[in-house]
Structure formats: structure tokens, C-alpha cells
Amino acid sequence: MQESHSLVINISFFVLLVIMFFLNYSNLLSDNLDFSVSILAILTTLMLLMSKNTVILDIAHFLYCFVYLFTVSFMSKNSYLLGLNIVMISVIIFTRHYFNGCLLNEKQNHEGYFSDLNDKIKKYLVFWNWDYLFPIIGIVSLIRFLKLKGYQLKL
Image 1 (cartoon, rainbow, N blue to C red):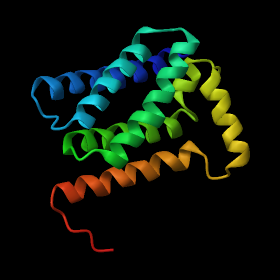
Image 2: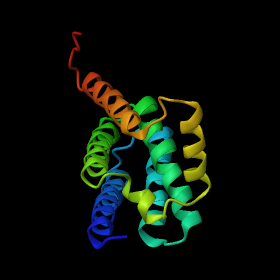
Image 3: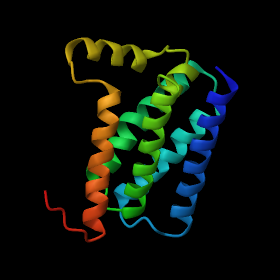
Image 4: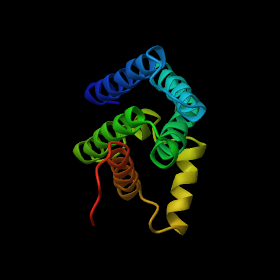
């Protein structure tokens, strides 16, 4: 893995970790779901930042991309988590295009059970492409964030 790739991952997830600790410390998480996903984000981030083991990285990658991002996008009613989700998904989309692929996949050497499972799902579900899924969940997060902030969406 190139040093620039590692630096992007480390900075992005370290910022996520700090913000999650801040949200917990400041009591800005109002319900059990928000608290649970923040703990999941903290654990996942620690796994991604501290481990080089492919299995651990694979599990953390799955937990972050599939469980955390989708849960916050579709279930959270916390504007802080939704706003952070929008920022993180924007970073993911940008880095996927700038570096021509997923940096976390590169960190885990494109190996692991969930990486293989993702490849198998792509064969059967044409729409299962993270280049499409990330913008969709980003838009869902943005719409839900704007509704929470009281903006009226007139489509």
C-alpha cells in the first residue's frame, strides 16, 4: 500500500474516531441506536487503524461500509451522525475516484471473506456496485439531514 493511501485512511478514520468520542462525551447522542452506532464506529475505526491482519480489516470494512453507513443513513434521527455520514461518504466517493478504487480494499490486499462475498454478489446483482451505492446512501443521509434541520424538500 502506498504511503499516501495509508495517510488518507489514517487521517479520515482518526477524525471519525475523535468526532465519535466528542459526540459521546458531549451527550449529543440521544437514543440507544445512536449510541450503539457510535460505539460500532469507534470499534471499527480502532480495528482499521491499529490492525494489519486481513481478517480483522475485512470484518471492520464490512462493519463500517455495510452496517454503520447504512444504519446511520436509513435509521438514525441524529443530525450530527447524519452530517458526519455525509462528510465521510463524500470523502469515500472522492477517494474512490481519485485513487481508482477502494483504499480499504487495497489495505486488506483485496482479500477476505467479505471481499470475496462482495465479488460474488456483483455477479448476480447488477446494481451492486459501491460506486452507485455510496452516492445513494449519501443522498439518503442528505435528505434525512435536511428534513431534521427543517428544510422543506420540493421535488
